[in-house]
Length: 162
Image (tube, rainbow, N blue to C red; front, side, top):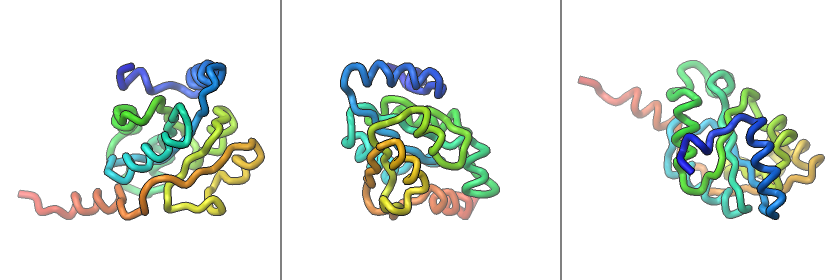
């Protein structure tokens, strides 16, 4: 499957995941802004994939990222961020979502596992109540949070230009 074929609407993804479930495959949902993909993101996505058979990645829309991260973000539009994330081998499907958290996406997709990075604990995951109500297991995956797109963006902005 080529990279662009991995990027689906929520509606199309619901249908694809139904087929995956019929084959007995476990679905994992991971999410984030992924403004500048870095090694920490790759390790997070690989860790998420180990939690199941099919990895779906929700990417915050441009408006959502702007609300969460502030002025000047995103650096890359959602379509470009989705394509870059879809190119990661561990990722099966990508969907862009408009909300500031993935509660509504959890409701629609009903994954078996909701993967979050190590900057969270099971108790601090914003969607923990939704996950619990739906019987979705929360998994904390990836390496320690010592990578940051925001830090990288700031270093690039501060880099001397000719």
